[in-house]
Amino acid sequence: MRRFLLALLVVGMIGVSGRQVFADDTNANSQPFQSSFFSPDTVNDNDFQFSNSSQRPNAERLAIPQNTPTPLEGIRWKKKNITIYMETTDPKLKWAFRDAVKKWNKTKAVHIRWIKDEEKANIIAADGDLARNSTGNNNVGYTTSELGSTRTEYDPTTNTLHKATSTLDPNQLDYTNQEFRSEVAQHELGHALGLAHAPEYEHSVMIPRNIKNGITKNDAKTLRMLYAD
Ligand SMILES: [Zn+2]
Image (tube, rainbow, N blue to C red):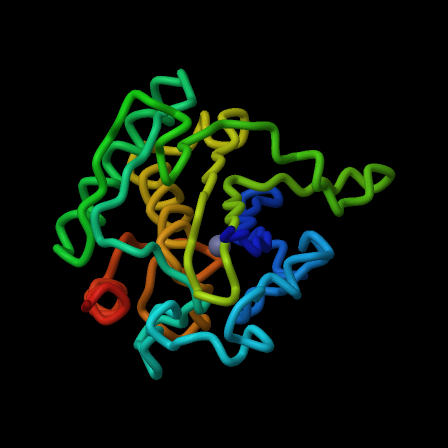
């Protein structure tokens, strides 16, 4: 019986402090970390011909392209047809997620489709209070609040994404304009599709600090490379 070896990755904390937008990037690097969420027996799930997981047929492992303009997490959905469920009921956030989905679909690299069944959806578009991750010191009136965050569950033996939840914080985004809210949603859905943070000097929606633009040509090219087959 096939057992999934799942790992978790939480990326994409975008934060604001005063008027400046920045990221809590403490755990954000371009490699998905393999945490200890494996069930102990998954290491020996090869009852038949393979003595260990490194000798599995390569066909199971999805190809991840090298040297893409925007960095990758090293994981992707198996197919380019991806489903998403709207969990948030906040009108502003719903608009932002819908607009972000349209913009990712415009790249033609993937086709993201809204569905009504949360259980079957690949991606969940959620809202939540992300200020709990505050790193600020309240004594000096400095607080940090994240605007968005994305949590992914994936199988590191096949590079396959199983579930992603992109969360926007309605309290933090309420007073921003709708274009900016869409860009934050585009950034978070970028993580949900397998994109990692881009360095400051790149032209990308995946720059964690100071989001200034939406999806760029570099991001579109990267996604087309990632979902080429
Ligand atoms: Zn991010």
